[in-house]
Length: 225
Length: 402
Image 1: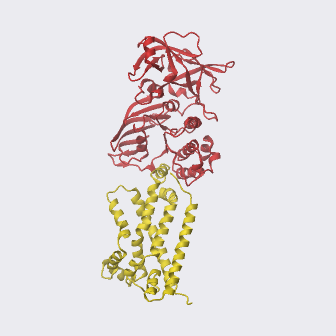
Image 2: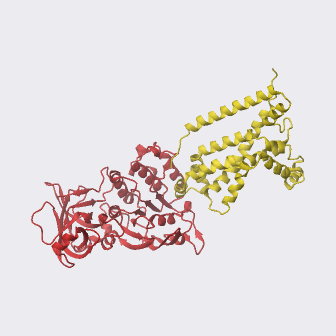
Image 3: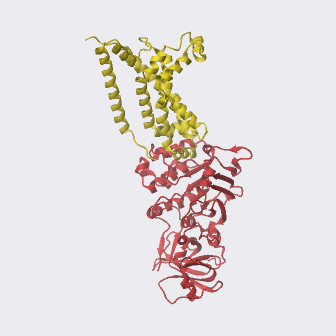
């Protein structure tokens, strides 16, 4: 039996890891702000954050495609600065994945932060901890489970995306052909054996990751307020 | 003996001495308004920044809101707050110092220890952030020692009892080296036994570290034993402010407390010890009282006694021999009848002190009690606060002394 091409798998893992890393950086402050704000803008921002959950991936992909096309302001700027197009590139895929997986990072984190209540942070403030200090030394360690859940959901959701990738990235081997696209193409061209190998591999991978997460999650201490 | 009545001076009540004499300028100026929901708090009071001041009132009276406002947690606070001239809040001038820059230490009703750190970690959290930032000199060793925290250091908060948790929280608050210590009902979550366990530590705190303290409580006995002065709050307004003895004496506490809580504080001088019967004789404006032997007070020192109104009976004549040892003569100055119940509350003037008695209305009628008439107050039990600093035994104890 011929070894199937593994590059799509590798690309998917790279994409998911990058998207998760970017979202940890961007999603954490957003979730923190949402958990504490009394701004009237909060429901609007929450709705925008949740949009990728309810929109068909093709709708999201379509608008992202328009946004990244060299004729739009963003796509045009990108071409000027980097001399490459954003569409049909790994960077374009990454931006699309970040938007697409945003709620999977923000919502678990926001829930974790909200469940802390104001007590621990007020205690920290009374001990002279600045807000950033209190976040890093109290809120974050107490929200470890929230971070784990958010990271795993984001990672898994990015691995599994299909519609958005197809719209924005197309199917360029080694650049934008991620595992879900590769499987789709194998099926389209009736190469079921190769489709099988990739699909089963992905299934096993997802299962192992989830088991690992649940085991790890059980070992994390629960901090009851 | 000091029958001339200057035993009223509260500072003299502290056996081992409270802090050094208050400086004239050391004070906490409070003039705040906080409004949220249907509740509004308006308090204007200058409080000497020395000793222990109780913030006393029923639940819902605004005690905790006032505390949170001092801490900077009530963002709707208007007005002015300043400690010794350092302005923390001045809404007219646009000053609102954020909580982490106010040199206040506090404990919360539920302790609020950080659950992801052990007790040592919690102490270190406070220690590290205040060690260079505060002029108050308190060392880790002092705190651990005074509060007996050594055996708790490597324990996680969820493994501690309620009392241990409060002790650790007190230690953490002290290690933030505050210029003002706010204690929000540290005993409210504890049962009677645990309260008695913590009380000696609370009593030791101020004499040991000398940090001006606001002690929030709705329990008269805690206030009477711990506080040098009392700010009474009700419905978001200051109702009274003054020395503990005077406030508890003069104020009609009935609407503020449950009736059985009403109590009076007596400051008496030790006049002799009786080795045979293990008693200590006290002098109260020329009248004699005896209580179980107070070991650590010498003759001439003052002891503070808490007398609950439910523990006082009245008689119109000095009773013939009875097992009740403490009978004080005085004049009935007021008699409040509560028409809805069987009870009346009588106030008896003893000279420089007053006690309250909770008697039935039927007895009041049968005795023919009227204001101005001489009466005898029979004390069935008194609690002692001897303020003798730290010891392993709880230092205030109720004695049913017959």
